[in-house]
Image 1 (spheres, rainbow, N blue to C red):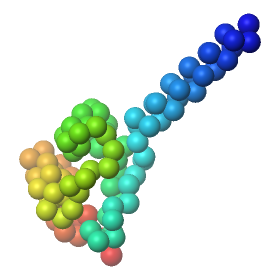
Image 2 (cartoon, one colour; image 1 turned 45 degrees about the vertical axis):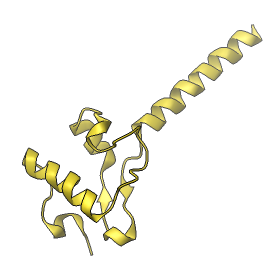
Image 3 (cartoon, rainbow, N blue to C red; image 1 turned 60 degrees about the horizontal axis):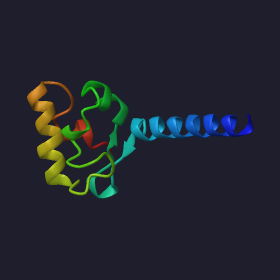
Image 4 (cartoon, rainbow, N blue to C red; image 1 turned 180 degrees about the vertical axis):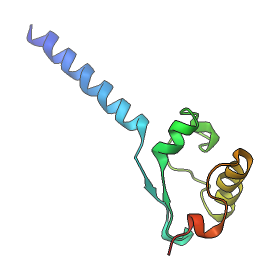
Length: 95
């Protein structure tokens, strides 16, 4: 009986941890070199229906190519295309 309880507990912990990891953080503070940008990660996940490949070229995680050029092309480009979200400098870069 103890083995079954331990197996069920391990499964529950693994499932919970996996769900928490997949969900990602609520918001992400982008590097200071990019300006003061708070990125609402969860909101983007919901809007994009968890299609992580819209932003992440590989598995979810840090975006290796993240920088000014990438963000302006990818983020601003998507916002312009969808006619939704900030597209002006001051809308993303807060002082």
